[in-house]
Length: 103
Image (cartoon, rainbow, N blue to C red; front, side, top):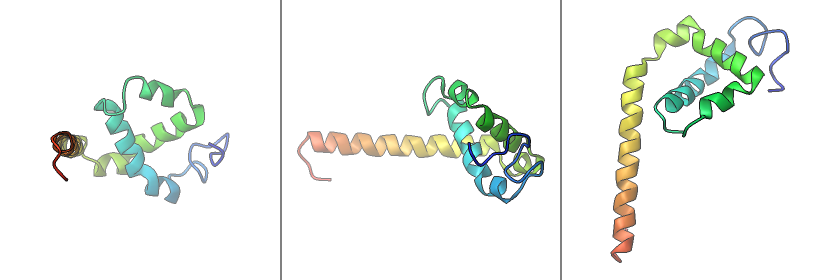
């Protein structure tokens, strides 16, 4: 990641800053999706192979404010519910199209 300096943890140095605050929810959901197996096997290992990303993402995930505001169990349940609804909708659309009905 070209935005990350070589010797510091975060974008603006050693302090958790605005860049991290803004993207923390996306980083959290990315790793949650990986843990739930929604992105396939080996994704976490591939992310770990990107040294700057891995160092930065781990620091974002370790931030106390981030951990305090993100409830993994609740978010996991909501994520799995959304995936289930999408899969059911796709199944209905596929079955309807196969039967010649318009969707």
